Amino acid sequence: MKFPILKNKSANSHCITCKKELNDNFYVFNAGALKQMHKNYQIMDSDMKGFCSITAHLDDKAIHEHVSIAENTSMGQFEIYSCSLHCMRKFFEKVFDELANKINKKRV
Ligand SMILES: [Zn+2]
Image (cartoon, rainbow, N blue to C red):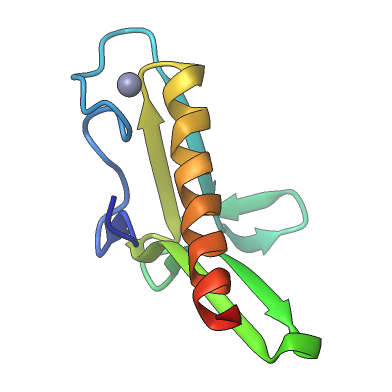
């Protein structure tokens, strides 16, 4: 899997793990920002770009690594689809494995 999985786009059109075409039953990991317009009123905003990453900040080992999941997504929003919880779990395992591999390379 190549990271970021979303770059300059806001969603995948198939299962992120097994690549199966999605039907009426699927799972979504979504995140984003909304522009606050009034106390109880927010809107999507075309000026916003979304991102998502996990970072290891290990000062005592001089290790600073991250895995970017999404970059430069439109409207400050993004969605990652999977066909099952199993596939969603596998996706996040790959994200954490990628970060662990980056850290381990720095420790050698
Ligand atoms: Zn799947």
